[in-house]
Image (tube, rainbow, N blue to C red; front, side, top):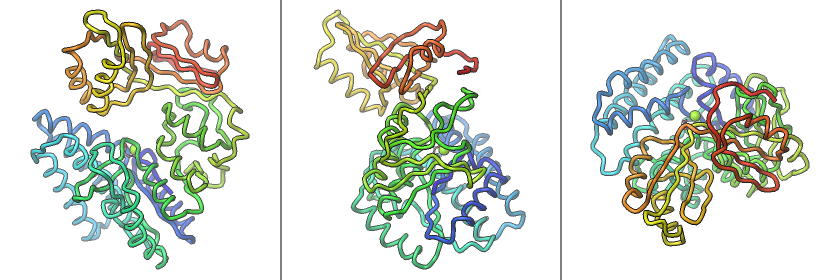
Length: 423
Ligand code: ASP
Ligand code: MG
């Protein structure tokens, strides 16, 4: 099972996590945790400060204090072991921020991965303080990846070996295994990460390699919803969906599960349950091979902070395979994932998430050979199993920058509108 940062932003959130772990601990159990609250964002901010040579102390101390406050709320009597573990991690973070790296993506992974190490250290000691028979196994010793920093790929063969050697014996000794999501190490032992929100994927990898009976992702919503309830008050929970439908929803940006999560589970036919962590007795969303419920409700996925970039040739010659190759190379080199694309005779339009760190370099790579125009602050709305009435209602009278439609899915890129929708 996996617990995300949103559930663990304060001590009472972590208390609830402990109750759930206790509830399920009578069977062999592996628990994957991500960083507490919005720690990963805070660490990303520190990465940027460090790369810009700016002062990091205030932000560093905020991260430190946040973790210390939660720890004190959970365990007013800190054990020596826990305070040593935390002190070491804070030192490691400060050092990681001040090293000169050859590769800035390597720097990112080395710094950001400490968020998960902090959370797992706190949660592990907290569980032990309640008498739980737990074992903390570092994901750096489990998840073996290539060296593609910030978006590393799993080395399945090695990872399978480490899991057999480390997790299986712990489970056989009736230990609850705690490990970190999102992070791993390459074969040189350098920290790597699997892409933002990658803890779900870690959980699926472990589920696959352990032949788990089931995988559960705990959420602060009742399950997979057909829209984000914070934006759409009438959103409903989907009782079941197929692996295929879940992959599509995740791919288009339904933030409830990471897109890579489904494939390893589908491969072994392991059911994925998305459950409310407030109430474990509520029926979850079950994700299995069963397709019978897939079109039951239209699903709406809204992605903010989209950039629309229009790339044209300088002399108005056609955009053809050669130019496209160069453009895609720039995307791949700068690790920017395309959300939507469309081409005309002389221009190629692409929509992607706005990531300031990457955008500048990316534009520089193309500027010499192409005319670039871009809009930022756009919103990408995807509707699966759409109907036109709903689409009209969602768009209102906003300007549409780009549309793409298939039989099941429609995607529209529009100006952001800060008001809440109702549907
Ligand atoms: N902590 C990481 C993130 O926020 C990984 C995760 O939450 O799954 O992206
Ligand atoms: Mg997270």
